[in-house]
Length: 350
Ligand SMILES: *Cc1c(COP(=O)(O)O)cnc(C)c1O
Image (cartoon, rainbow, N blue to C red; front, side):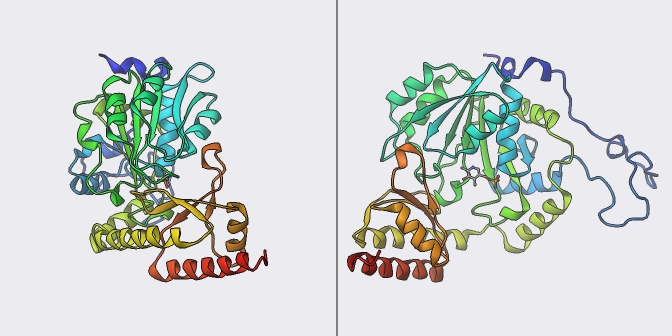
């Protein structure tokens, strides 16, 4: 099957922008081609449109070909670009699950692209039957998030497998939290599935959210198209250099990830002991989705104590809170605050 027909027709002739100065290999080049200030030093020049050093670092880290990695201003930019590359406004649609990361639907709406939403109910483990339902509804792009935000769990294998085998459009698997889930990444399947895109990010496990760097893994025809559609210089050179520097100094944050997973397991055990906690959903990520009585009241109460968690508002997440695993000190502070809240509610002081 020729998936290149999925690209919007008017975008197919586009080629990536690449300044001539970076194609030539002269000794003392004079760069008077880009209207830069010739007196400025380190940051005065437009960089190479793609940071190949960072691509190569990621390639080593993930054992994946460097020329099949697309860098973006966070995964958020990649979500927007994927939608704009494949979906014609006022005509095409994407499919998403709910509850899931809300940027997919947001980016689609901004581009006047329809959104088909498939609702999951607790405990948010979509079945092969739901996959069949998704397959009967035409859409250009299907977004899956695994581990899923806000529910925390990896999507079940039979559900994923069915969609990988049969989805006729682009299938995006958002693996923003994959480093907390062991060896379950789907990037190894990209060889077999030309329509598969896997997204990861430096914002979560790598601890570099402020730098805004996302990584997208796919076959060359997709990466080349995204390179052609994106703005030139979409990831700043400063961000790439800081990321490279930290990767070199710290390496892969394995110890931090292990610590976060340990702390998550402790919270998973502790939280159900509170009378107001009804359910702690199993998590493969660095956060927990927790169903409580009076979630809104608890959320507000913690906020007044300076502890910020997220109140979920999706219909299938009634009374759910999403709590990110912090440092041991932060988790202890949360635990104390919850004990305090439990006493206060018992004494009807709320
Ligand atoms: C946080 C998050 C992202 C966004 O990542 P950035 O690279 O910071 O834009 C993408 N997907 C999911 C599911 C997330 O939770």
